[in-house]
Amino acid sequence: MQLPKHIKVISGSAVWLMALCMLVLGPACGSGYDVEKEDEIEEGGEIIATLTGVINYSGDRTGARLVVGMINQWPMTGPPVRFWDVPGFTGSFPVTYQFDLDEYLEGKAYYLAAFLDVDENDVNLMMNAEVDPLDLPDEDEEPLVIEPGIIVRDFVLLDPEDVDWWWVDGE
Image (cartoon, rainbow, N blue to C red):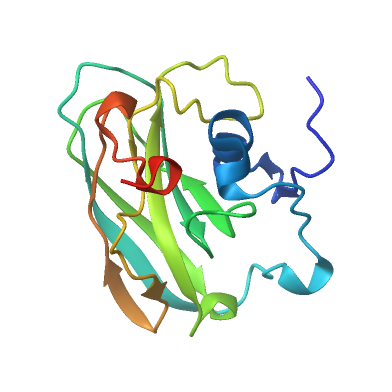
């Protein structure tokens, strides 16, 4: 399967939340977004912070891949700035995660999201909002400003039918 031209590949992985916008939400997230050179965030700088927390899920769906993403605008109009697979995920919850954040993110504001990949046949698009349990930004949630130190953000994954799709249906 070949990705559409407007899905940008970052660090060798396809962007998963852009797939959510394109496949499920359509125009609600915008369309035709193309990451321009100046919008790209470099990677590999000095580590200035640690993003850590606990991911919980009490539903009955199972999966082998757990992903955390960093998004610069919600509702999204483009791909996530960064995303990570939770290493060592065994399929049971709760899960503690930890990722290093580098100097290129310092002082910038991001929304955070997470999902459990329950259908491993997603190929490069990774997320299927029809079946994957997820935790997306709430309507009144403020973006997180990345500052040096330890940043704690816990997630509670919900099955898609339990998610408040407030930006889609205006409720």
